[in-house]
Image (cartoon, rainbow, N blue to C red; front, side):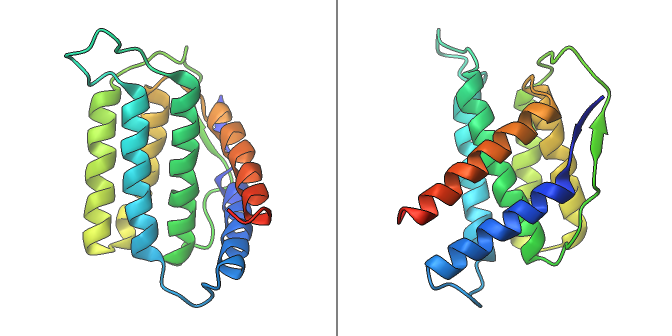
Length: 169
């Protein structure tokens, strides 16, 4: 069973967000639209690393390491947005049956994810957030990654982001 501790990652994200807000003098600022646009940009970056949509190119291979890092960046913003809209807890564990990490249909997954993120950005309907999480997890697995791999990539990137904040990024 592949699983991810969203509750624990949410706590890590809240700590990072507080550090960023303190370092950048942003306490009390409404950053939701900035974060939504950042999430849309990160989804786009993940799509570019996936490359399967580039039907015109000989180089359509997924860039696994870069793609996983971009998906971890997406998760940072998903968690940050969850906190901003008042989702104070997420299920402690999310599990999926083990698969052989077979790439299913990342094109359709990215289309659905992009659509629900855009719909949330325009409506701010918190009920859509559960769908964002489900679509994101589906996209991750459709790209051939386990939830354990995503969690580890998130933890590594969270650490890098904290170092960046300490060094004036």
